Amino acid sequence: MFAWFDATPYYGHKAMFLGWKHRAENPFISVKLPSTRPGSVPEIVMVPRSVWDEDPTKTFPNVMVMALKAHFSRHVDRGYMFNLSVDSPKGDPEDTTNAMAEMVFTEYIRKVHVSTLKSVTADEFAAEYMRRQRYPDNLVIFVRLIGLVGAAHLNGCEGVLKGPARSSSDSKRFTVHLEDGSGKNVDVKRQNYELLPRPRLVNREFE
Image (cartoon, rainbow, N blue to C red; front, side, top):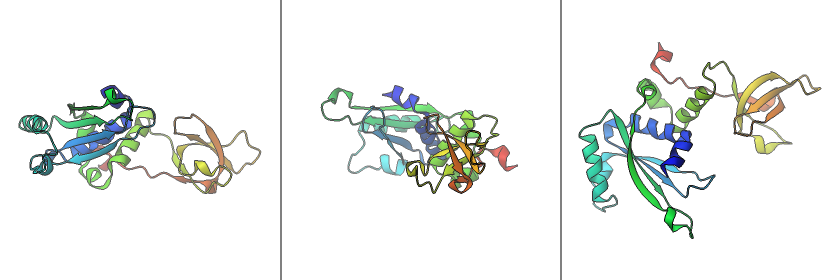
């Protein structure tokens, strides 16, 4: 189960951001996954101490509450606690799992600017962090496809603008390398892409 989480870094960055942003609230990050099969999308939410420690309905088992109290009595700024649960489809009951673990805060998350924590969502942070991992020099232009008719299914897809299209006889077209994992290039007109806003993340970007 944790192998699935480690293999999908986007969700890990999202959970890390929530844990750091709300660390003063002694939260645990709840990750609920329908199954570990490809395509499963988890629900990731922050559960503050005001909820897990004052739980009249006993939603959270005593052993979980005890583990959380032990963690936050010692390691408030070292890492965050997260609980990963998998509700498997019928016919696969052995895969149903519920486990808690401590994840250590990275040096990068410690450098995130306070205004970023307030203005950027966890999804926006994870997406931007992944872009920077793929392109460390950050010398690329990210765009989002819009207004396509013949290939309307690509509207909303994000990619890297590569420049004027070389394979097209239309000089007004530009090549966009899709960042959806397909590795495909598409040639589109200028009106069919918009520049993707890039949030600032860390302290040095605000100096």
